[in-house]
Length: 249
Image 1 (cartoon, one colour):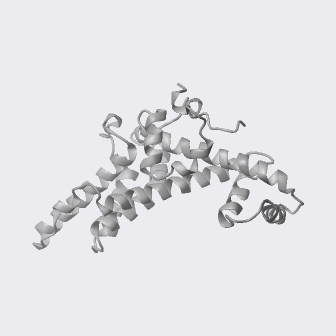
Image 2: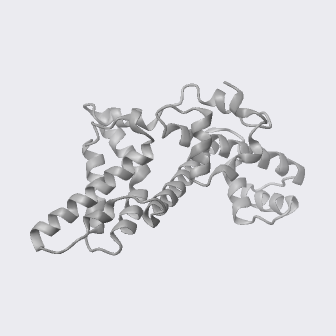
């Protein structure tokens, strides 16, 4: 593994979430698996965002469940990848569901719910909540991918070591070596830990880039950087980016 990320190379063969959406509208077990994958990936972000927008409304859980059910039923056949990012599609879908719920409640109870609250002004705290929930979701997916990588790669301790570092950010290499040795049941040298930690960070950054790229209809280096900045994730990969990385087509 080199000392810096080669993002353009990683973009070759990236399967986007739009592919998953298309599969969700096919027939048979392939569609069922795609729909379940969408729910597994995004239900936490959806629920957090609904609660933020509806501000304690008793209908929040119902609305969130409605969106999840739509994912399970494959109700996004009209999704158009040319209209923006996948996370924006999901945000609009959630807002529309909230709007419909409020309109239904207005008709049924005569309660003055403010449907206009589903508009998205610049700096809307709810939008910040969506970005925050999406960021946490991306990081969770990346950690899961790193754990899967370790399980399927003989000799890898990437997930275990990076978790130890995350839990003990100020620990020295010697202290990390001791902690890792305890986990593995054998002695680990500090210099080996330093090398393995670099590799683990690199792998985590690569997997994070993959997750971000998969949410874009056309994952280019420019658009990936925009997402990294927008979601506050650039710090996770900044030191691993080679000079002039965006110019490498």
